[in-house]
Each structure stands twice: as C-alpha cells, then as structure tokens.
Length: 208
Image (cartoon, rainbow, N blue to C red; front, side):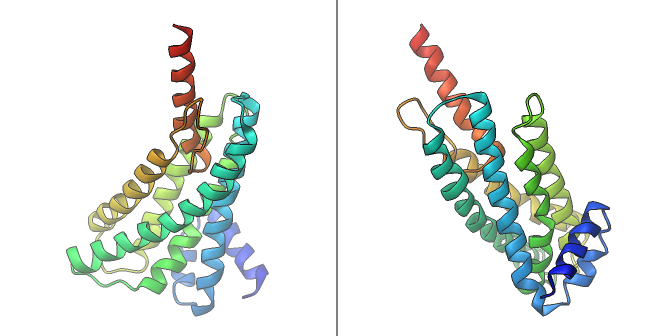
C-alpha cells in the first residue's frame, strides 16, 4: 500500500470528507493499513494518557507506562476487534442486513484515527475535554463509516455501533481501576481518569 495514499485518506478525514470511506471499502490492500491506523492511534492515546499522568504527578509513572501505555493499548486494540465483531453480528444477525467483515475492518480502522487526539491529553486544563472529544469523534466517524458498507438504515447503524462502543468503553473503564497499593491500569488514554479517581479516593480515606 502506498504510504502517500494512506496519508491522503487521513488528510481527507481531517477535513471531514467522509466519502473517503466509500473509496477505502473497496480496496483490498487497505485492510492492513487500516488496522495499522487504529493500532497506532490507540498507542498514541496510551502515550498521551501516560504524559497526562506525569504532568499530574500521581506517581508510579513507570508502572503506568507499562500497564497503560503498552499493555492497556494492546488490550484496547484487541477489544476494538470485539467492537467490530459486535457491529457485524448486530447488523447481519439481529437486523438481517448486509455487511462484510473485511469492509468493516477497513473503514472502522480508518475511522478510529481520532483516538490519536488523546496524545494531547497532557495539556493542562484540557485533558478531559480532549479525551471526551476524541471518543465522541471516533464514535461519530465509525457510525458514518459503517453506514458506507451496509444496507442497514441509520438507526440500525447507530444501535449496532453503540453496542460495540459501549462494550469497548465499559471493559476499558473497568480495566483502568487502580489504588495506592496497585497502580496497574490496563487501559489507555482518557480511561486513566478512572485510575486517578481510585488513587484520589484512597488518599482521602487515609487523610481521614
């Protein structure tokens, strides 16, 4: 796959040119680059979360780097595969509409690029806003992407994508828990806020 073509896809996404999904869905060689995009975006999100942790000075930064930025990002990518599978099952088995796994993988991988925005979470005062915006943009773009490769209507697409996204986000939220004694949040990016809240709660309890 031509790297310049992949960069061109991402540039079109920046300009919110969603017709890029219609082009990518029919290119067999776009499957691997799309998986690379969602993987890279997730690891950038993990790095951004770790940098935020450093800026906030919660401590145990090396543990957070290993368990969140590396292991957590890898888990998030695997769970993205579950998200995609749930979308496919919802559309084809529940709504009885047409969809193909390969096409879903191409367009949903490309649509996950906004996760990389979490790499900017280290900016003071904007961390949570950046994380939430990244998730919202990813959900919106994946919904548009799914619509381009299926006969399902918009309501069915939103329902299917919501199920997949909810499971993905819920599991990562649960995996991001941490305490003063065990700082091992296995989730990247904005999900580290759950770990931080657990540590903060332990500190307040000790203070009492």
